Image (tube, rainbow, N blue to C red):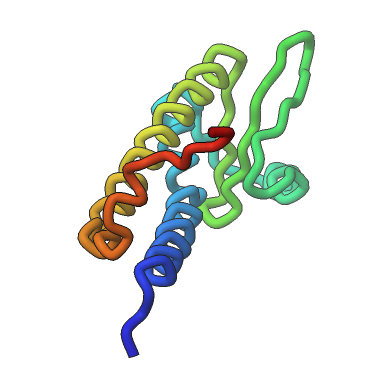
Length: 135
């Protein structure tokens, strides 16, 4: 049975969204953090490991200490804490925004390449002409 163009497009869109969600994984965040200037500090003592586990996983936490704000991102798999300050966090935000825009553009390009615009020929010129209202 042949699928309708709309159903095929919806399935492709769902697949692309699932792919995009997978791309926003921890390794990408870690790469952006390092590129922004965050330092990777291994947890080398039981106390550090405990503190690492107590931070929210998958999130950057703001922790003020001695009048300075630190931004912390725990990587439990690697047993590493990524540490930055305001400047590094702002650079991370900039890099993250650029990365998201690039992913969106790539997703849109992939989505557009999956459509067969010839399938819409059955509508004739109806798609090119706006309906006339109020005449």
